[in-house]
Length: 406
Image (cartoon, rainbow, N blue to C red):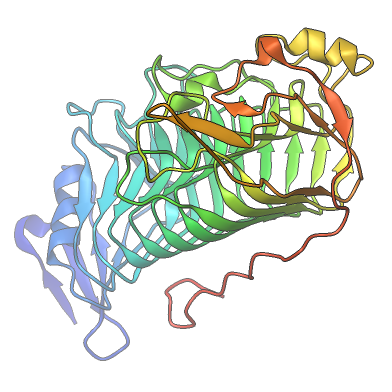
């Protein structure tokens, strides 16, 4: 059975279950109108099928229907190009639940590449988001960007050229980022103000910083915790920082492997680190003055387990870094900590035990006990920390009925 939607934009093909359809988009004319018409007309259970080809779109796309799959012919065969986009918004914005996005690419969006907001059970699989002109501060901030969402799977995704983070998950819960490639971004992968995240089996290379686990103040959701970072290749992160001025990641030094900032219960294990000039693992407090009384700027309960550490830390890209490396014998050790265990707010000093551990034994403290810290005033020393963790964050388990989970 075949029916035509208005304007001949799509074909409807009977599918399963009984009421579900495969909507085959005919994008030979006005591609943007054809695709957006399909996304508007889709019903729960439908598949919106994008054909192979490169399609020029001058406006962003949006999906607000639950239970829809958007499927292309492959991330190098179905390409949505936003090089001529007139607005500054996303390439694709999803605000619905139980959505699978798979098999296409978004290139050169003026804003973020693919964003979900307020979505539950959303899967990003076999996608590519790229700014084809290479790293530039005028590129969109985020490649794949689920925010205020839950039950998130990012699987086999490639992002290049984001001026903030290639794969960014913010203010969300129950997250898996796996089997993906993030390169030539400011931050490769960032988990921010979020809870229960597994980041594993990814390659992060040629970014400014590879994997950032942050918690920031003055946001609707704070208190991020319980992240596991494992079986990743975190190598040769050597792209100069090109974030716009004023952005928090603009302060990330080139050559950072993993940075844990103001977050709790983070376990870093079974990763490969090599050729990260600043440091393989940095554990630091929030670096700016704090006005939010509900915010804790310290990293807490961070354990760096058994990893494979190659060359690193020979050219730290922060003030005083060269002096610290010289004091350490020419390069920083694999794990460094700023030393902060207290902070000042409204004239009062607050503190909390940080509880760090490292399977390798000693780590370097910069000896700066009060946040925000000043690296030029560091008093570095190797310190003894526990070599076994007190506890591990739990494994993240996504719902069995989430689309695209397998």
